[in-house]
Length: 252
Image: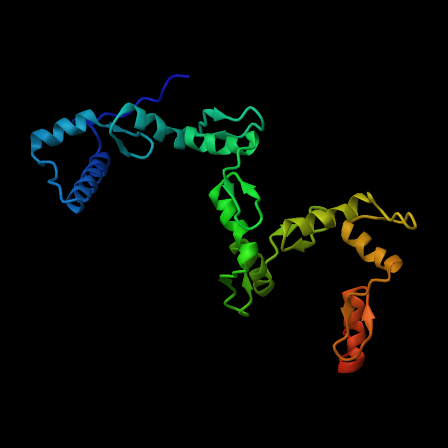
């Protein structure tokens, strides 16, 4: 596949492309002024010479200084990603991004937690991990004031208030706030019961159902009534019990 050809500015170029070039030149001069340097002399001869030496993208009109920059820019339009990982098939436009990705496969973990010794391939992952040790919850919900370690956790929580359920079951139309909840639900349609209780060999569709069931065997009752000392194995049973104290009627 041949390299994409740039559009060079000539007398026949459209007025729109010419305007785009002038904006690009003005931006460069603004940067020079900020740096305390003298901008290029904007004479008719120098402008013409600079225009002739620059390359113009025919897709969006952006002005590029050289062929290398032009080819890299064109990848945005063509979708070309020449750097492909042979281990997982993921592709990248730039070698720098590709090299960072390869750290995942080669096991090179250069960023180490000073608290527990766990290592990570990227500084970003280490910083996320450090929140576990510091306990710092900087992301606050504007609706209820609840705080979270990560922005992703806050975004999921906000759906409690907005009632947003972006994940829909293709079988029955039931909607969910999170993808994992949808995945668990979809197993109810397949009927596959892959989770087995080793005490009684009863099978369950999800690991959560199995965990709740196993409390029958272990006697674990983690949910305690705030009004009396009675405890329950499942939260639903606790809520039903507490209506005795509150007098709240269950609406059907």
